[in-house]
Length: 249
Ligand code: AMP
Image 1 (spheres, rainbow, N blue to C red):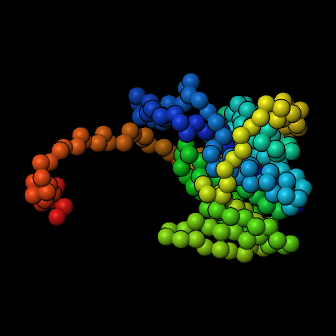
Image 2: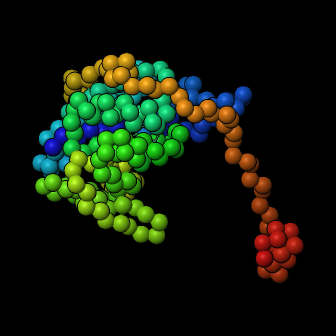
């Protein structure tokens, strides 16, 4: 079984992003970039499936600027076998990403497509669902457990207030949630080995996909500042303030 994993290069989760002065977007100039954390979980899961003898090949794919190569090399160092980079400087909306991934999947013919549940930059949470619809594959989103059987896959999903178990017929699209696994620490020899693994380049034109935007981002703003808290003298004062000032009781 071949697994295709989509990895996105995003602002590192430790960075506090700032909005540009003209409020047109967030400022990512000179900011540390890393692999989207949910995609790291997806790569880890794919590599574990291969190590367990349940998958034969793990192919990672990233769409975007030249530096996505670094993200792909990280995935290769984690244990993926080869990488595909669809290079473009255009901003990609989830539908464009899903169409490009579909075009790659049509050549690669994976049985399992693993994506993160959401990219932590735009927080869209759309790509896996759109890809499953375009491919007409079953989908298991927010997966916290994946068990591969002969011709189906059991997925445990994180849902509000509990968990749901699904049996999906292969081929499938699965999106990863936080509890699926804890990605491994990459060792230096693996980084060196990853440099020799194949990284294939493709263009949007080659894949024949229309990536023209359908959305217009009107404005990006900082969250409202929280007002400072106050210390109350006793319970009676607290109740009085909640009643008369906050008007919540
Ligand atoms: P989103 O729907 O934008 O929240 O992204 C969900 C998932 O789609 C991510 O976790 C990635 O697995 C995949 N994805 C989104 N954008 C890209 C991209 N530019 N390159 C590769 N994978 C992507």
